[in-house]
Length: 186
Image (cartoon, rainbow, N blue to C red):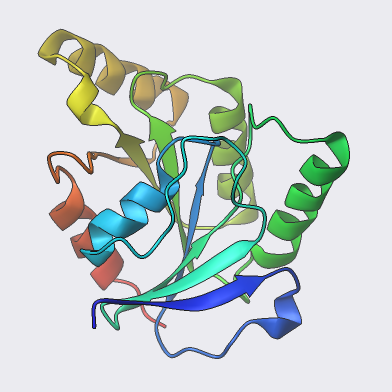
């Protein structure tokens, strides 16, 4: 079996014990977090929605018996109340630390690599010591000129970060991300 849904969680003390390394999947609403999980899992285990803000809990998946992915609620333009945004922030504050996740994948829309919310999360991850990778998602929507400009902008926006282009349409980046994740220790 390539992927198993472990459940949805709102409190750190309820997380199941797993031997695989845990990887936080982070990004703005509708940036393709669930799609990337499905790409890496090789199956449609994570629900994909066109409506921003659908993920409101931490959803855990065991993928290929190699990693546990934590699909966090999106940040940014989700049409949710201020109370719900604070709930999202508390969820991130409770779960996103070394006790619960050894690594993070920050997904950024390759068509918009310099949004302030994305740069803020990157800086927060760096300052908190959470090792992470920047995935420029939806790369299939870029022509070569746009791709070159995105690469340059991403290097400025996320200095020092490992950056990989990805697309769930073309499977670009899948192997590179797997190689990175296979280096993690639980």
